[in-house]
Image: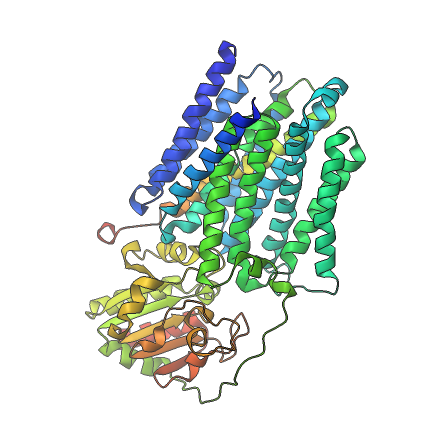
Length: 94
Length: 462
C-alpha cells in the first residue's frame, strides 16, 4: 500500500480516537481501559495469518503464541468489561 | 484487488465502524454495556472474515491458541475481584504487547530470502518498532502487575547509574533499529532488539513509585494499542492500524488526565525515580484529635448532608459494601449522601467508581472533584475512607510540599471531617497531611470496614 495512504489513515484514526475518548466520563474510565484492552486484542487478526499459513515451524509457533495471547485480551477483556458495566445502576432501578 | 480481498476489506471497514460506534456508546453509563457488545460484534466480524483469507490453510494451530487463550481469559474475567482490576488490566496490557511482538517477529521469520531482499525499508522499520514497543509494553506491564498485586515491593527502585543505563538503552534502540532495517535477516540483531526492549520496559517501570501507578497503567494501555498499530503497518492490515490507534489515543488521554490531576508533566512522572526527594518546607505540628465510632455516630445522626471521599484504602479494607449500608441508614435518617472521587484515587482511573458500583451505589451519586469543591461548605460531615494525598491541604498551603499545586478535594472546608485510618502515619506518598491537625478534623482509627460496621451497629441500637 502507498505509504502516504497509510499516513492518512493513521492521522484520521488518531484524531477520531481522541474525539471519541474525550467524551467518556470519569466514572467509566476503568471499563474504558478494560474495553480497550479487549479491542487491542485485534492483533489476533494479524496472528491468524502467521499461525494458519503454510510456514515453517518457527512462524507457526510464534503465530500460535500470538493467537493465544491476543485471545486472552479479546475474550477476557470483553467479558470483564461486560461484568463491570452490568454493575453500574441508576438510582430508580434498585 | 480480487473479490475475496475486497470482501475482507469491506468487512474490516464494517468492524471499524462497530468499534467506533461501541466507543461512542461508552460515553454514558446507560448505554455503555450495549457499546461493549457492539464492539465485541465488530471483533467477531473481523476475526471470522480473516479466517477465510486465502493465506490461511490450516486451522488446528489457530484453534489451539484460541482455546488456550480464550479459556484463560474467560476464567480470569469471571474470577477477578473488583479490587484487583488494576493488576488484571496491567497483565492484559502486557499480553497485548507480547502478542504484537510475536506477530512482528513471525512476519520476519516467514519472509523468504527473496522477500527479505526486496521488501521496502519502511516495512522493516515498522517491524522493529512493533518489536520494541511490544517488548517494552510486555515487560513493563509485568512489573506493574507485580507491584500492584504486591508480588514486588510497591516502592520505586532506584540505583546508581539508572539514568545512564536508560539513556544507553535509548541510543541502542536507534542503532540496533537502523542496523536491522539494513540487515533484516540477522537473527542476532532481532534477538538483541527483543532483549533491549524487555530490559528497558523493566527499567522504566521499576523506578516509578506506587502512587504514580495510575499514570503508568494508562500509558502502558496506550503502548499496547500503538504496538498493535505498528504491527498493522508491518503486515499491511488496515483494521489493526485503525483499531490500534483508537486504543493508543484512549490510553494517552487517560494518561493526560491523570497527570493533570497530579499537577505534573508526564516526563516528571516517568523520571520521578531520578529526582531527589523534596525537603519538607516546614514541619507540621499539632495535636491529632481522635474520636470513637460511637461519637462519630452521634455526629452522623444529626447530619443533613454527608460526603464520602474514598481512596485506595477503601479497596484494601473491602469496605465498599459497609459504606453502602451506612448510606442506606443515613438516607433513611433524611440525610443526603454524596460521593466525591478524585481522578487519581485508587490505583487506576475510575477504580473507585467500579468498586462503588459493585456495592450498588447509583452512579448519579458519584461526583467529580470540581463538582463538590464549590459546595464543600454545605456538607455537615465528610467521611474520608482510605484516602490521603487527594484530600491533603498541603497541596494548597505548603509551598515546600512535594504535592504542592496538585488539585485536591478540599474537604477541610466542610463543617466536620472524619478521617478513617488505620493509624495516624503518613499516607502512601509519605507526605505529611496537615488535614489531620485541623480543628474540624476527627480521626477515627482502626480498620475502615470495622469502623463503619461499628457505626452501623450504633444506628441499629437506636
